[in-house]
Image 1 (cartoon, one colour):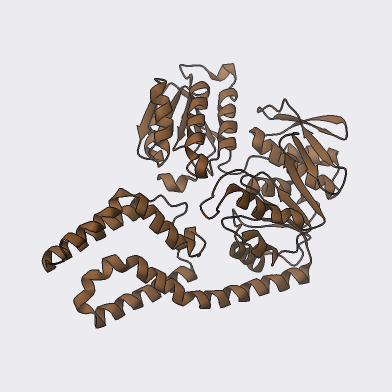
Image 2 (cartoon, one colour; image 1 turned 120 degrees about the vertical axis):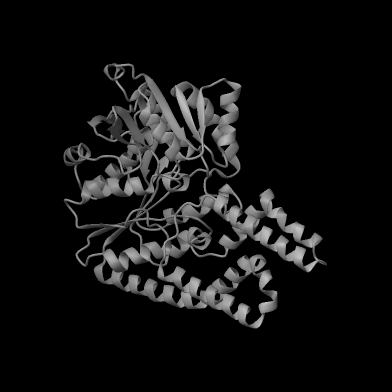
Length: 468
């Protein structure tokens, strides 16, 4: 699971060690030293250590569930072979195996690494050859948030005019991109849209060895997912590599509130009064545009503006784009709205970051009209574990979010997580009404039973982590 989460880099092993050293449970291993001269006691201690190690791993909330890919299966086979060899030739020391779990996994990974490198190079070369044959116009999108949303918005706007390819779901690693090209790209493709994730140094550099980018996009950059970077500046520099490629770059100047194109006089000035009820405004070439859309949230509207600006650059006029914009809906788990048991559910569960969370709370606060507050259903409720990934700012972000929740929501169901204590501290200081639950599912089912809740915001930072 760790290997898969860390995209099969040695960083995964380092992460286990770092998290283990920070978790008091792992220090039960020291107990084994006490019983060194007592064989029976020593073995009992080892079993206790192994139990705590298992609890430690199970306690760790990983971003994705394990997928049994061919690579994972190869790793499992080599692990089993090593265990069997150890059992056959070193049977008298078999009690040491619990302490060697991480070491054996590391050895297995190291044995397979050269083989995996050869396999990866084969598929990378295959993808390069395919791109050279098809010769699509390549659009590459990166950023700390908004990559997938911008990709889908742009695809929706241009797919009727251009034969367009996009990567599946949130495939944004090097090998995810390569797999999408090899398995899914049609020979008729005219425009290919890729999202490029950055989890460690040189990720963008590696992707650019495959993609000959024509148009680059950086949606936004903020301190998040910094585990593999020495500093925020290092993360910025890695993402900025994309802006140095291609013939044109699209970016966001937050200070000037402008979406810009780097090599020509094209820019949107984002309206100061962007509102969240399906209307939005912007200024383009000194003309004010007021358009209708089903898209909710300021950040989603900014992503939509990115897509509009790029589509216009590709030759689609504003009259056509206005019609297409009216039919766009939010991407799954990104401020989607539905009704269950007469409760309005705003699902923003994919990935929680500070800006997005603030945006979602504003949607919660303004979405319902007065007529919806009837029959005793009055309360606005949030269910969240907090912002789990925020680097060195994680405590600051969650305390700020806690204060905003006080003003935007009537109640909060706070899901137990590594950061929920920061929000809980704010709630306790302000005597705010909240419910502390062990899982998302527990809180969600409680809310659905209530008769006084009018609207609930799910801000969940990938639902798979929080059990439901």
